[in-house]
Length: 107
Length: 159
Image 1 (cartoon, helix red, strand yellow):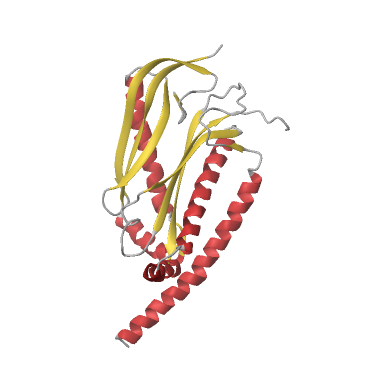
Image 2 (tube, rainbow over the protein chains, first blue to last red):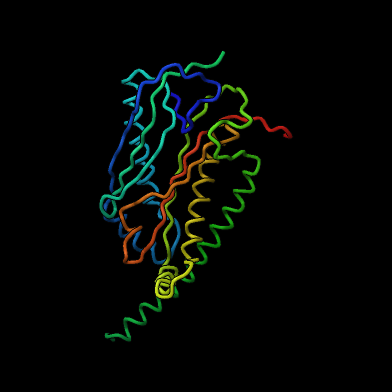
């Protein structure tokens, strides 16, 4: 499966559109991570717990999106976008969406 | 050992701690970013939607995503609080945002490089919301940035 955030795929011809595919997830870290983040907010630096949280959410949302694309019989997803929203403190929603297509390499 | 004097001591201690640890963390981070950006100098980064200088290779284009969450420190939060009284540019948070953006971008570049690509296009750098505290009035700011791009192989005319 080829996934890009551009409208076209270089070296490939898009022959068929399969429609919008999407995936979302809401994930939270355990309270210990939140406490650690609170402490980190005193001294500065990267909040690796929340970075991980975003990475996991993004992976899961993409996986769900790709599962939909597979079901539609697509072999590529183009123009993928991400949006996030905060549901409550310590939980993040990540939404990934794109257009499922069938692409062939240009001979 | 209690009362307003004790509380003031704690706050002053936290401001001092934030100033020392925070500025050290920031300085180290900026130095690290500088080094990595130099190291990745020969990597084509663009936010064009087409593929500049695309060359047909054996690797199909591929989506790369990286995220970074950077915390403010107590000193910066305190400065921003003061700034809110008088208005104007909040420099302490501005550097926080630019650090998170540069970090996310470098992570995308490094991931793409590790996979054998030498260019990315359509780079999107967005801020994300983690747990609402980004918007809370209570201070404790943190900045979450998601960067996404499409990696591909390009041809450098002079390389």
